[in-house]
Image 1 (cartoon, rainbow, N blue to C red):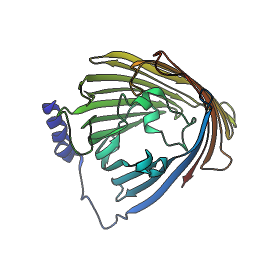
Image 2: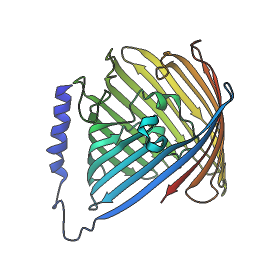
Image 3: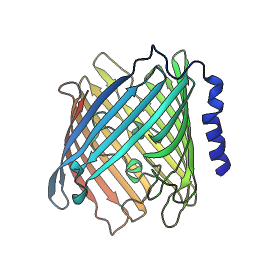
Image 4: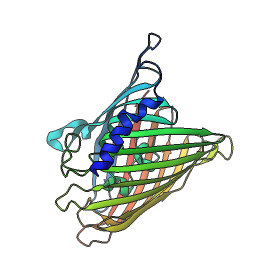
Length: 334
């Protein structure tokens, strides 16, 4: 692993010079800064224990600067549950990275970035997602949402096809992965995806690391994903996503979800079947199945209203099954 870390660093800081021509800055460069934000509010009703609550679930503040046409800086601050840390809320830096794109097919990103895999991890902002609830694999963070390290990336543009890749190394999981590699075992991975005619995307990803817990279990995960959103008529389109994960490290199990949907103009209808053989977030490490029916509506651009019902079944008898209604509103300040 140390040899792999060194090799990627050498490629990042020395091999990239082969593609570099011109100065990092020029007098013609004009930096731009765009500040955006989004917020969502949820109402949740649990039919099993007859409880209900409002939740100021997220507030995100985003800074995005194109310093030159090749150099970019990005930061994203999240306030979760109103950011009240004394009441279970969070204030955290979700992303903070700089990138330099030498050519379309070769760029470097360094800092804290989203792990490039699947569909949901790269598109999980509430104003963009079709459901308020999230897939079990994303909720369990078998592959972490983000980490701190170095990433190589690029795109190859062909007629009617775009091929994208990423190769990365980072601190992986652990108690404080943004500042230190607790188990001194770098996580690494790769992502490859192809998009046909802009509406048909297929991807395959690999992640390898240790889980950073007391057992420090070795984890190797393969993730396959699909995203299809073809337009059938001017106002009717399909919206289908799905992911399949196979963990083949010290503990082997699968998790997957399939989410077919359709949109009629600004109105969408979705169904998701979600299954894992090992739900580790809830501590029972047993099977968990979730079935969701959802609708959402965009009354105006950048505002999305969602309503959904999810039935959760847990194989572990110590965990109560759940039947949950969620109604949410999200607004993107664009």
